[in-house]
Length: 605
Image (cartoon, rainbow, N blue to C red):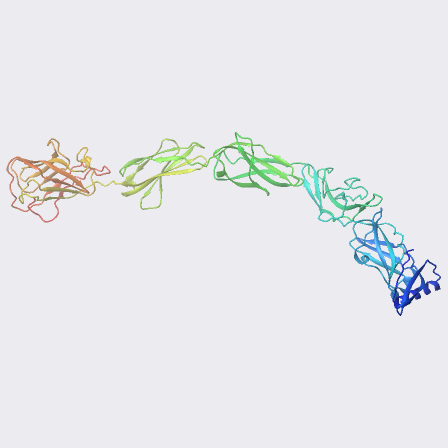
């Protein structure tokens, strides 16, 4: 026992000490005596004997989860008078296998007191482990002996949470759970869907698992399993102290069988743009989780995922524009719910072709008539040419009309332009390769003209010479219904000023014809009856400039050669009979219908 000594006690304390001593004597308590000293009135000293308090009584323990209840009997003096004189008990916790004491948590962390013969306190959130407890009486400044330690009690760790089972490849199952604070490890228990747990034989054997995961490799393919996990701490005698079981995992059926009937459907020999890839796969245990479509260069070795699908029938859209045009091999990778995989046979040599053909259309000419050839050229270095479509539309319109489709080079169509109205037209050739890529070439605003030109008018005008008489400087103008091809009048002529010879012949009334500059070949202006007589015999005007402007040709009379030219005395009208040798720009021959000079009759020139 530990003796406590109080010095210079106050009178109240002294009285309590004397009373305690008297009680101890009355109850026959025999113990070594303590001495109390006091001083009264500031002078002298005296002492009175007292005794030490009894030691603590060994506590008993009970546990519920992580709460330990410590119960103990009060010693006789403190138990009877604790309320009056302030007795209390200090609780301590020890590792059952030995070690230093600690102050418990919860209510046991502060000294216990009360008037009952038996006291108790709860330590909550007790760490998992193997523990013993003691109590020590305390009365004011006296401390009794610490009680013997209690019997050992086991505090199990908390049950693991988040337990889950997931399929893994090769008929294995991955089990995972959350860590438990203070746990030294974990025991894993397994049952089949029709069986029960054997808690005496953890799946991990005698040594607890250090990790919070376990790959169960002892499963049988096609069998369904469930799991529980218990956290473990090691007791003082090296025994395992287990928590209650975690919640049971969901059922997991081991699957060591890879998918079957895995096939890849060929998307075609040539593909372009976004192409639909499709395939098939089956799995009778965990089911098909995904089907991935893969590709590689036929000349390469690296496979790349294009797209995937998780729902039968399996298909997905692959954008081929992200790879270079070339030959590719395709396959399917089927994965089941356990991660087992099966590859399909390879579909080899599929050409990706996203490059359009090269195409041109031959210009049929600015002016066309009758039946014309519309020719195109087209080449394709990838999948090859499939066809060329040739079309026409009015230049002012928006609707294209098919002329023909040609599948063989050289690509050509015939167009009967007489079946459409005269006017401006566009022509185009659309080339399509085997993969479906297209390219278009256009020639625009080409005139279809199947109408023969006609004579509109013929007029003469005086220059600087004598009125009413053909003299140098006077003009003759032929007006046509449309522009005329200059070369159809004079070979090599482009419409610019060139010299010709104008002949006036006497034949009752004069006629006028036009010859070349050498006066050897008549030009196809036909003949013009002037309606009056200017000359006798034949006269000519050499070096006469001829020029074309728009729909008209004007000839200015040059140097006169020959005899007398008279002055007209009567108003007349000329008549022009054209020649069919003259053509318009499309090649239509001139109408030979005669045309009488328009306007009021005059004396010409």
